[in-house]
Length: 193
Image (tube, rainbow, N blue to C red; front, side, top):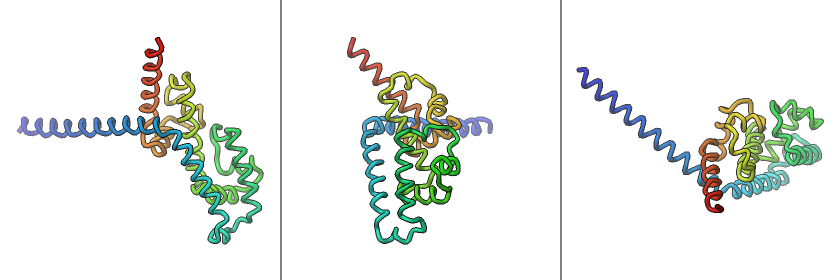
């Protein structure tokens, strides 16, 4: 009886290890794809925003409860928010940003939905993750930071929420992406010597 229980425990342990290794391979593959396609992500993000902007003027959007003038005003303010990298601040909420932009939370929320095609939280996370993906590629100091430090740098409250958002947007974990960049940097330095 003891050997049978031991066998089942061992069997489940092996299955668990196999699943974990398969998940790790998938994360590594996604990190490599992210590195190759990070420019495409930015292009897709811009084209998605463009597509959302064009949708504003479609007939079905004309029924919106927000006046077109208000949307255009908020659009300009959001563009300024993005170019000034205001999304890197910690503890940004719809309410706090609405106050900073001189509007109310309902207008801001509805405008983000219409202009960006996503809710406020998704919009904010995408800005942060796209920013850090590009920064990690170009800033050799950043790739030496811990995941917690990176999360703090770009406005996340903790490393878990940062890792979850990173994985949702890129398909891999930040640790795998950073490790790939570090390997690439090491190979480049070795090649130069």
